[in-house]
Amino acid sequence: MLVEKNKIASHNDSLLSAHKRKFDFSASEIPNIDAILQKIIDFNIAIPSWALGTGGTRFGRFSGTGEPRSLEEKMEDVGLLHALNQSSGAISLHIPWDIPENYTAIKKLASDYGLQFDAVNSNTFQDQSNQVLSYKFGSLQHVNKSVRKQAIDHNIEVIKHGVELGSKALTVWLSDGSTFPGQLNFRKAFQNTLESLEEIYGALPNDWKMFVEYKCCEPNFYSMTVGDWGQSLLYANKLGDKAATLVDLGHHLPNANIEQIVALLLMEGKLGGFHFNDSKYGDDDLTVGSMKPYQLFLIFNELVEGMDARGMNHAKDLGWMIDASHNVKDPLEDLLQSVEAIQIAYAQALLVDRKALVLAQDNNDVATAQEILQDTFRTDVRSIVAEARLRTGGALNPIQFFRSEKVRAQLTKDRGSKSVATGL
Ligand code: LRH
Ligand code: MN
Image (tube, rainbow, N blue to C red; front, top):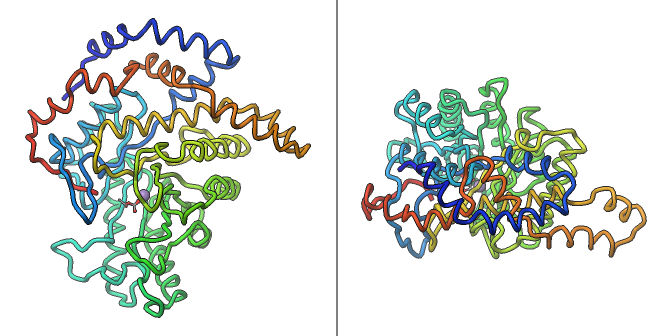
């Protein structure tokens, strides 16, 4: 389903005067507004191919309708998001859930929708029907060398798919670990995993990155073999320059100071990218900014400060991806909200008065330092993010457009009410 440009234009016309009033006020307070707008316009977030349907939990799955039945329909959905917010210009594939049958056709489709292929994800956390050896007791850590070889070969195959599509990174998330004390020798598990990752690393093209994604817990509940940022950094340092850590916001122990982790990984030049989502308890994979918006702002505050300190290009030098799962909301509405929340946090972080903050920090003026951050966080930048969409042909209010144009009803008419998307 293509979104007609004229429909977006009439939608924007209906909202323009109210928008202009808000934007003109916000812009009047920001001397370098055009530079800020350009940064927001350049900032794209990749959409996970596995989050375009209804996920569900072990207790149940309440299916939505009109879900994508193929990789082509998943790209249609991401193309739709990108048409509405002009900031979702990339899709991150998960193999084998999304194996492209015809690379040329898929790449053509991607360019039709204005999409790039972001990091490709391997999957050694499930046993596929045609698989010889099981990953029940892990994959790259496994005590059995043949299981490790099977998992290494799978990751190398994923790189090959990515090369064909023009992707430039492999994300490795391992469910490996143990569920009971005594089950695993931590040192051997680390060594096996490192040796296996070294073989995969060796298969990376020169201009590729390997993102090592860590996670504290689930599906193993005693230890995870890439369990936190320290372990991920150990692997990334031992592997080499093409390896970096990947921070999934939902993968931390309760109350972890993620913004401090981000600041230090960035300082070390070993922060590769993000899986943005939000959570209240575990790896809930909820809408970005829906539970802890201040934490999201503080993370972007460290990102802007740290990336500028290293002269990095905000839009290109890190992997910006969402990783979510939807149980009670329309997946596309949820993803539109998540992209908006990320852009709002980034825009606010760009507005922080860095000179004043450094001065307050150097004078141990705690209250002023707090006020500088909280004042910016309490600054309404929604009209600035909307203006970025308006200037790039997007919709001023994507969810309102999605609803008023009855997009889900149209997708359900095309795909049926029983279609189920692969993924989580
Ligand atoms: C693991 C994870 C990982 C993906 C999976 C879909 O929790 O965050 O990034 O492979 O979700
Ligand atoms: Mn993730």
